[in-house]
Image 1 (cartoon, rainbow, N blue to C red):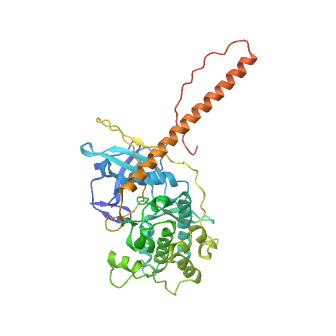
Image 2 (cartoon, helix red, strand yellow; image 1 turned 90 degrees about the vertical axis):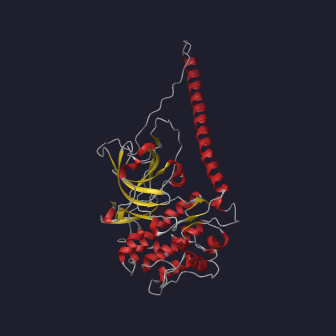
Image 3 (spheres, rainbow, N blue to C red; image 1 turned 180 degrees about the vertical axis):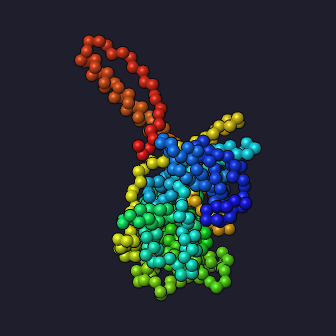
Amino acid sequence: MLVGKRGDVVRGKSVNEYGDGVAWFRGSEIGKGGFGRVYMATLKNPRSKHSYFPPVMAVKSAEVSVSGSIQKEREVLSNVKGSPNIIKCFGDETTMGENGMMVYNLLLEYGSGGTLAQRIKKSGSGGLPESEARVYTRSILRGLKHIHDIGYVHCDLKPDNILLLPSLGREGSTAFRAKIGDFGLAKRVKQSRKRKLGPYWRGTPMYLSPEAVMHNVQEATSDIWALGCIVLEMLTGKAPWHEEKELKAEDILAKIGTRHEVPKILNDISKDAMDFLQGCFVRKYRSRMTAEMLLNHPFVGELEVNEAIEEVEEAEGLHEIETILVVSESDYELSLGSSSDEWGYISDQDSLSYWSDEDISYCDNDVVSDFVEEVEVEKLESITNSSIDAGLSQSTGASSEVSPRKQTQFPVSFTISTGV
């Protein structure tokens, strides 16, 4: 038995079964799901000035043979990085577990404020103050706009996948910023349009949009429907489609799909909040508001000074490293990648995903394409350097009678600490 943050008990494998990293110790287990397990990690030498990692991280781990979901998450996080409203990834690492087991680890930003789901539960049946809900909503919208602009759909937006991290308020007070995490089910928009036959929607039934349930379509505005469910949950303290008796997944899907229903919006919320939710719950997804449109809505666009949180853009690449591979006696050569959230309690029952061979092939092509682009960049840099060297040689030869010596280039590889 392991005790996680805030006394939550998590039963699972021993802490050391997955092994420690090169620069960090594996701590207690703080979450688990169908993807693997999440641990708190601390640095072996936290006082080092040259460390790439923060003092505390969340490490998402799974045996290499079953780590496909986490590796895909790493790939998505690498593509959507650059927003202060998306959980940061510090790289990935392969460790040696007990009995020679190879373990894939994704190193992630630690959400010290827990998840939005925990915050809502703590608030009681009345929900969060509207001023607090507005701040979180704006943070989520900014993250969504960034994700959608790059061409991705999250597909599993819900309070469990929103992390809260401390942020400095404008008057020096400490508040919390919402960050989007858990990109294990995310996909490209163009990928979501490739096939419309057969059930292959991804996510949690309670937060699915009508087009996902009825037509297997998940595009950017599908995330907006899920956002509406989250905002409604923040304001009321109750999950969408809340009933006196707990509904089964099939009942929820029937309400969203064949019955053509929308979540009930209570009258005891502000006019701006009601209008915001109505913009999210438009059943025709092509008529639904976008993240960019909603950022200009009065519900989030006119925050008071004491409600606003400073969201300083973080330097791209800060605390970011490449894959670290611990080579064993078997001399495995692995190429790995993925993402996560600190407290993402995801079970096979909560989040569902239908994958096709075409989906898998599409992801593989993306990886190959990225590799080819890197090779092309290296070739271009090599050609450019050779041209510059040739130009310098000709210039020197024109001004001197001494013949230039044959030059040999020796590539040098070194690391510069980001953020310096």
